[in-house]
Length: 326
Image (tube, rainbow, N blue to C red):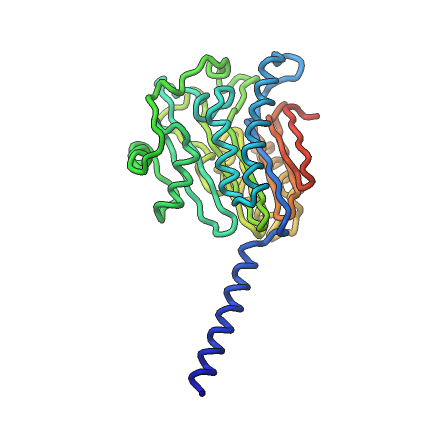
């Protein structure tokens, strides 16, 4: 009898512990869903951007939002919604990710991406891939197939090949989009990095970022986009974040994690935390912006440039798409 009671007690307390851990993992408000995206920050000016270019950017964000939101509506995971949304923009030549990636100083394409699950804190990233059609898929596979966080260069390309991801010839990424000819130091330069943050029905957050990097980058440069805590971060306790801009500044200040830390340790709202981090970026002389989504579905999209292509579908189902500071 004593053994039976002991076994029953162990079973009961194990069940309680499991339930408590599940609740901790799902820190949001079950039932609510939301998705926010960006398509890059930069110096686009409202009165000078061709109407056709503006329309293409808006159309791309809308298609991406719909792709990710459809997964959330069906009860899918936030990390899957983030991946699906980013894939749409990786396939769109009007953004600096995937098909529209800019070139290095050697005239090559080197792409970076990362994705993070706020429920488990598992993250995956790839840096400097050259033949992977959708780098965000490779980043997701790093989570699913390895215990690592980041793979880079030829090793990341080989990993994608072994796992039968769709590969392309390097010239697949070539486009005639005007932004590829822009000088990174020019005032009108547009950082066309793409990113997404999602909240699913189970209250779980996820974030992801994908980019072709800086036009004319040298020496195998990797920016913030594939670096967890700099360009991407997600934690159910606080928020999910994706950044766009001058990656060196985001790395130095760990901008994505800084927003989550301000919420966790200082009790700031997602809006205040995001604004504070961008203010720090500004003080450092850096340019860029972030999208952030907390576990209650609150959205923040601050930036210090003249534009940031962005869109969202909030917890009420309302879609909003903007480019400029209006």
